[in-house]
Length: 233
Image (tube, rainbow, N blue to C red; front, side, top):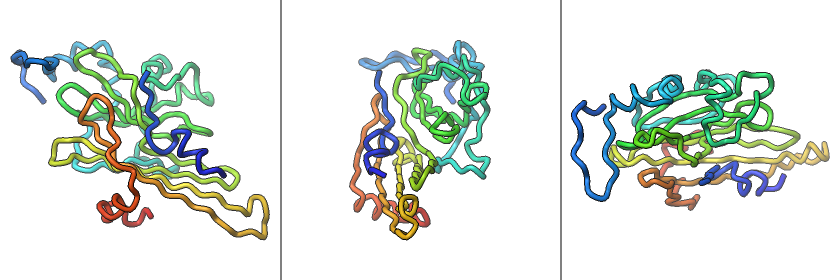
């Protein structure tokens, strides 16, 4: 296996494509988009029925992953028409499923943006967990998305990605992303028991309109988040 097969292709870091409040009317804020009334957008959004399929989440720290034997992030399957709203290029049913895209959860990133977690099609099944973004003010899904979880295995190759969403100072949403990949040489030579392994890390920040990569320094991140990563590395 080539290390770049996962890392540089986007399977690790940023699968990034750039293509409650009260009912009173908020005062205009200079140089900023007006805040959105939480009740108003939920009832008036043209995507209200689709968004309801994403279960409301409240968390201090949320571990995002996929495990074949776990019900975590199993989600509720979207229709094909709903799946097409997401910027991942779904055009047809996936392996005979309704769409192969499953709504898992939603939460507020800030006053104007929702984070939507969905499980989406990967190489062999819907084993990729992605974070999507929804703009309440514009009432639309945004073009950026980021992979937070994945499990893949094939002919000696193995790849696992796990992320932790958390709020810095209880406000600023960030994510620690960890990816493990390996290659077992026995698939080519049964006498060769060598297993090559790679571990990669990234710290992401979602406080700005575009996701910012704060660090990919493995040494610094493993030290800072050693308690979170315990049992993973």
